[in-house]
Length: 427
Image (cartoon, rainbow, N blue to C red):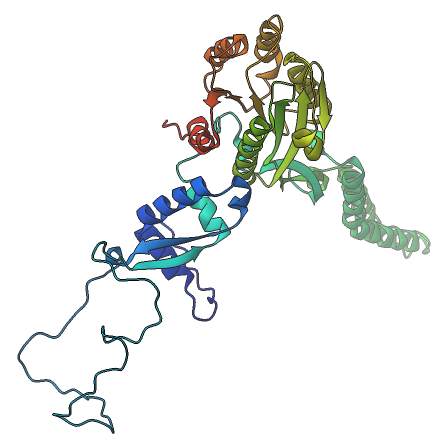
């Protein structure tokens, strides 16, 4: 087991370690305060921290005290005004003896409670907000939390497989080896041939036949050595070196799909916006790069910017399949499923053209769901479900781990529904 000790210096009068211990110790109280804050705050404010309070009775800790008896030495602070036995004058003021500036009358009911208040940072606040949640379908892609690696060229190496052999460098190494190995042999051969020629130029009476035979044998041996030097050897082979370079793969695309027909009121759109914002914050904490694509639809679908998505007004009927088809086309054109983690969040009041609900199920089952990591559908209506909900139930039965749908009636249902959609599933 390995232990990592963080010895980085903390800021003045602060201790990150003690703060973390405090958060762990009082996690239950802090979590309750955070949930209350989420209920009373707009989701758009969740980017900021929060000030929470804990009753002081819950943060008391055991202390050591001196018992009675025994011998001990103490130092008491002195004073220049009073001696033992002096009488103290009653403070001036009203009949209650106080001189406070409070307003209002006294009450004989209620009991005060001291509270300890402190501030959570943005990251600490979001940690408690998303406590117990996890991204769905993490098993399908290891790229979600890990880094993807791809082989890239990184110089030349002596070891490798034949498919990566570098012919130019291998031939260059072979040529250098041959020059280095044959140079001393050629030098010795040249010296032997010069000695033989000098010996043969002598007068026949002065020639040394044994010396001549010896030189010829040496020359023959050196020539064979030259011929035995291989043209290329395994020592000469060089291969292109490939190393696995980490590349960021934790990137996601969030498709926001919303019905903007005449049946969708502004209050419906506000609820949908809060749900989209909460989902975006959740994805942002799990991916380095999150792109947003806004698709709105009535009888026809259109990709728009955020301003037009939430605030532009439309009238007319509703054909949901047009939006699902457009999302499928955008994925095919710009976001390959092998490189992106794809999420679709759809908000609607459940109203749809009767004959189109079956088309929606076919688009999802046959094409779109094979590409997505998760699809969530929220129906913002207090009324009974219609044909679209029934068709989506069939899709949920086919893809139970990657398709979820819930109903939202009022803004207070957003966070509970979100927690239910993205609850942590035990293995």
